[in-house]
Length: 170
Length: 259
Image (cartoon, rainbow over all chains, first blue to last red; front, side):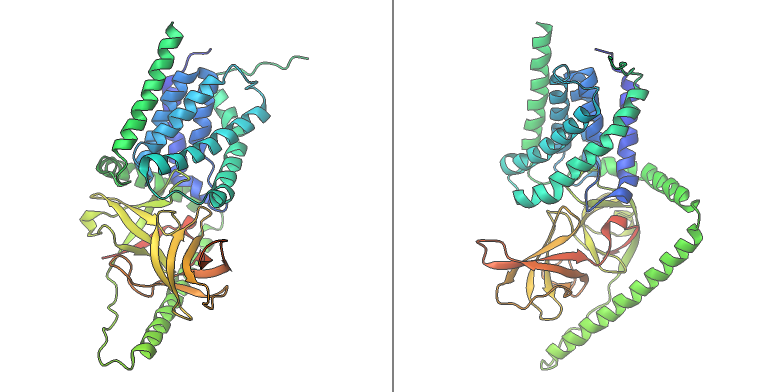
């Protein structure tokens, strides 16, 4: 497994957080914004393992927690969990395939959003959303949007982390 | 062995985070976050200015800007007409009463939007005014077109505004045409939903929705938006209406905080 370049990881988290704060509202579609930080956490987990995924998830989540109006720590917990799971599956899938990456980000995004509902119901004891409506108007569009945006993000991260794509075996 | 240790460590970190969340779960408002946000508000303001500068250098910017100013002026005038209509309606309803309180004009603090909620679960904005500028918590925030939300967290130089489209936002509202009341809640797709509309009420797409003025947060008769569709969920004893907000909350740049 390649070694993690931490300055690059934290700089990427800061950059993506700034994009989330200042620019993403301009490319919202029907209230859905692509979750670039989640794509980053999935990438770090996939290529650098569970420990790095957890670290990236907690850092990115804390950044989100400062600027969002949500229970403090909720994003850190969910992104940390996503990072650990992404790290656990890193050797079990063909992570170089674009289709696999799209599917993975879609899955992790939906997983994070449903896990948020479980947190609402069992930890925060607050009102949880209507599940069919939440799936239709929130989970599906956000996961789809994030998974499509994940491809260029993965390309960018592969470049900044200095990971070389393996040549196709003919 | 080393692998087993690292798995235990990761599990412990996740459990610790969950315990922290459970302890911290009474309210989303958090003083640590207010202080951190306050410290970060100046760089955020700078970043926002830089983004505006880049936007300003785009072609036809001056024409777009002029267009925007003129549109804002039209919206302001439309809002005034709305207010006069609401006053007229109120006058008609209350003319039989001897004394009624004159609707007092709002005292507002203009603020700039310097940041947006980075998550997809909540819908809030960060503004560049705080306690120093006499912005107060739990007061309504409006724009030239209509209602925006309310102040939920406040620091010295910045504040967080929960938008009416946030699923945790609840506002008492009425339909302008027939004064039918209901509760406005946010929906994830950037629209709102008015619930608890009685089944026999006459509600139709195109009806305008105003704040009801119940409670101390939102003053009466502020335009919220327009009904897009009306429906009934199975098993419920009331109708609901999907509402498009008067202001495009995704492109909000300036707001007015009520004092």
